[in-house]
Image 1: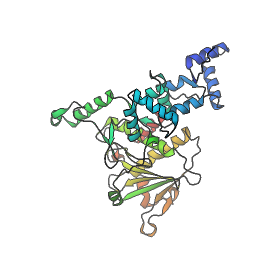
Image 2: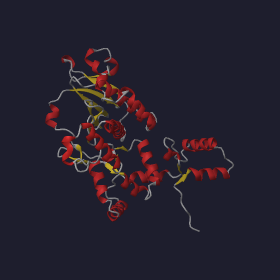
Image 3: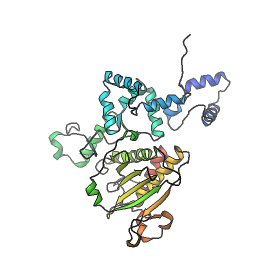
Image 4: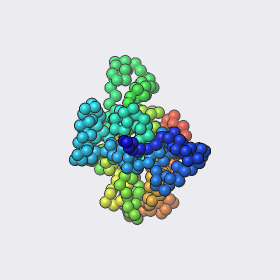
Length: 371
């Protein structure tokens, strides 16, 4: 007889097996699954309908599926996968993933399931684990400086020469309609390559307020910065979907990024593996809002630490002083709260929210809860 190996079970299969063991209550089945998950016997997640419908009985199957969207160099099995991509006419999509760290759903379905059933589960799982997030900025390409730009053409938007006759609101509506018809795109930060996101000379001439997330009491684990980027891009994408003219496309590199949380609410993130630090830089001008950027990023780090890192992360928050007597010195957050020099990090300016956004100050909390 041929043995059929099951890597996972659908919930209806679990209920049949439970019924055979005398367990008929849905509550009892859920309690059983949670216990087995806590014991490490199975993997069972409940955040979305797609996740609740699958019980993974072989964790290695999950790992292998996740690795399908991450390059593996000279692995002989990977060479066979690349050959399959070419035969399926998906090689161009794969090269686009390597170039931009953006993957389309068609390629994910090719990797995970021809009919897309398992793709729903894997997509939800990777988003829940913050390994991947929706990319709501349309198709992209890289400019000479490494920045990501929208690649919508007038023809694609159906605008042609009539653009001058349309209002900005009408153009935005056309853009949203076009985006809705596109194959869904996702951002995979672990695929990002080394690239510059700004012109170094102009960057050096700018003045910034700097906040440092210092993990050196322990260490900054691999993958934390990528997951933070995933949350930032996902949140920025939700704002961009509301007003594509107010929120720019993120500029992304392996250890650095520039992201917008509002029309004039831009910030830079830099990862320094050697010192176990993540730096937040907000340009000094009258419209900047360091406090809001910090508030959102602190909430994201708390969410990441709780949901993914089992509360194992520890960090201190430091601010860089610009005072003449100690310029460049990093001072602990607790020592900065009552000093006028650092007041911009502690007072939120509500005028910097995106017009029409509504309850902007609580928006990102709702966003994180929806994860």
